Image 1: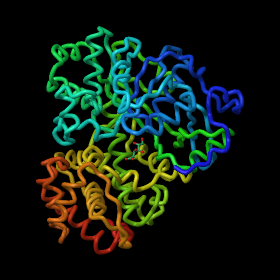
Image 2: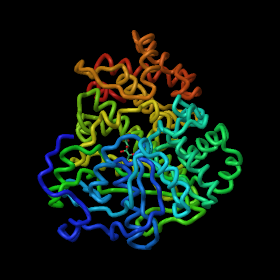
Image 3: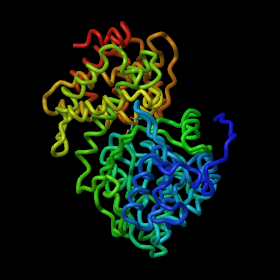
Length: 496
Ligand code: CS2
């Protein structure tokens, strides 16, 4: 990122110079570590770190976070140079408010120092491990939930040293923790996966039972590890030079770990922590026995509609989600997707009306200060579409209902995967299944029917009950044909 650093860097020595409202809620560097977080991305910094800092500020506790970067070094270097401090700017049409967050007690880079991460996971002071590692890092088949190890995880399972995958790190860390008798721990998935706690548990159990050289670990994990499910929500676009510039204007110092986010945030957490947890409820989180209804609400309404806006917007040449919402008729179509398909597909949490939640979501997407790129939301579709749209379709069809608007989302993803926008410009396709998807489409893309059949044969993406449903197939073909012949704008204008 090309940023000129011509002001002082954010750091402990700079805190006194910050405007009072921009200072951390805790005294940074004084809170002992109690949490290890895997995944040092913008979402963690703007979500769990913010909640945890507010919880420590309100209720105390030794819950400083050591955040681990599983891949890149850039954020580790930036935060190390800033005494683990970073700022979050909340952006809205009404203006920006920026505050420095003091929740991090350390940062580590897993690839260059895996032993340090393993040692942390085995430290009795660490009682909670949170994860934001994205859907694909779980290495689970999204349809069957079975572990499908790549070569790196296969090496980790075989006892290859040092571990290089997320499941491998957890495996070695928990083996060391069991050996050190360091006590129970909660592993908390904060990724946008359905039943993310159960998925993490499934990943862990399969990893541990297939691993070589860890006798007794299955039993130890069963007795000592919980995996509470969560629903996490905050729109946090990738950081850009403008984010850093906004932080500099607000703080008067340079923050190369700055994040920008919408003002809204929500966190629903299943309360199953065998060795304690921060008082997150004091920071506005909802602690519950079952996050499932919240998770379905959020994945199907917010994320499903987000993906729809991203694919249709990218095809229509719109750069951001807020720009996409300006496409004539798009919000009407998204409202029908919410009211006719999403709301009819599941039972929401008590007291929540899906259409009201959907209106709030559309208002959040329209926030003009958030420049969330359609191409960012569009990536990794094979990992996202099952929980965001395909489960909606499957549940509607099982109840004997049509799923026409869900079929539109699938068709728009498919047209996006075919690689060209309405104006003929090529579209980038980033997806862990890019190879198989592109191969299927190369073989079948001559007609809309061929393209749909080719993709519906991808068992690792499309649940069998959706793939074998003739009405869904026909609906996706109808939408894809319209999108290819007439483009997004005319298709939406003609949508009934
Ligand atoms: C988005 C999410 O990039 C995406 O796929 O749909 O990251 C979304 O912004 C968050 O889930 C909001 O909580």
